[in-house]
Image (cartoon, rainbow, N blue to C red; front, side):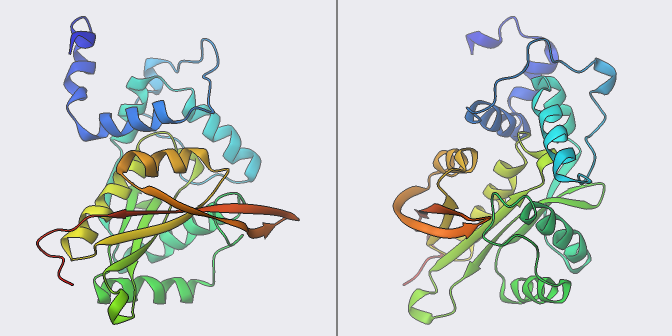
Length: 249
């Protein structure tokens, strides 16, 4: 690409990596964010990942703004600390903490706090036993994001799976959501799931942009889908369909 002819070596070396591409997709797609003028972390901060979980909603906003003010190079360095792996029993407590953290923001999920740990454990173990794709994003062993696709239990609908995902605020805008989503989708299509569907709040523009980029199609709107804090909110139904050799009707 001509754009990279005069680019520094670190930029050219990272351009071909999936982590870099994921960060570009997250960064460009977040149209609501305008970086503050002159807000670039010093090189000494490049290898320092943000804290795992915010202590409060105010801290979550501050941490998120700090992450979003990073240069592309610092985003790449931070994203290198995050790995995407299939969920295992030892991740259950961390998954539950991450789920609860996102739920308590009261903006992205239909529930405002996680269900009891025992129910999260049952959900995860059932996914593992059933072969439902369920991936987590890890930094130093702590869960900072997840994506699961649960196959429908009715035989005539077993080619369909319902997707749920989330990333804690301190790791948004770093390509984590893009990577964990693609890992789950690839696994779903490999095991014969043909259609993956979801609902996303109509005002969650970054998530909608992410789903658009990976190939989801908008299929309709559920008006007044939820009522949180006295406010009714619409939800957009989206789905992606991909038939492979493994998908037999």
